[in-house]
Image (cartoon, rainbow, N blue to C red; front, side):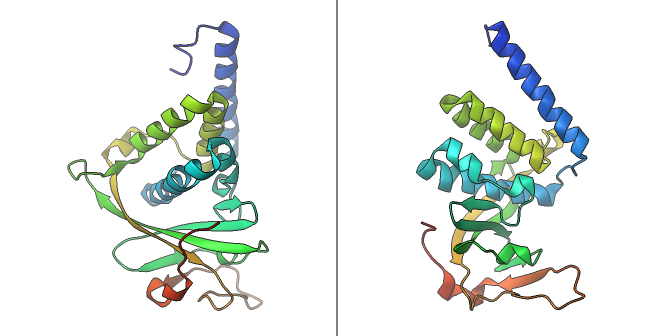
Length: 216
């Protein structure tokens, strides 16, 4: 499918080899395939990438900011700013799944919160993850095919595979909000010796004073 419209044999072969190498690395890594919960997280990160970063930084640089596929501490590193992407449903709460998520040595740390709820194809403006990714691919391909390769590699690193079952899943993306994590932000700043794992929830109703309009 990737090479059917390529007339140049050498270019087509390079595309094929690149694709095979990406699959080799993915299968060797034994990454866990995304479930529905993981898809919601991916959708939120792609939404941030497409709507917040592409228009401001361009596609190539924006892709370099996306660090979640490599399982780094925060989802995006934008110069000296860390951005953690979180989703919420009807409750105005987010889940912090590790100590590192809200602690960084960088100058600034932000939390970008997106409301994502289950939906269906009959509801206007609902998003299907397969369609959303294909739309992003088309947008990238217009600019630079090398960036398209990079995007596909990042998806594989993330654990995303084009599963036909995903055709049935639709989500509605609602309001978004941005918070700057200051010293007095409600978070756990140190872990007592002996604590091996940490997960907790933050009530965003108590974080109104930390809301900001933009990262930079």
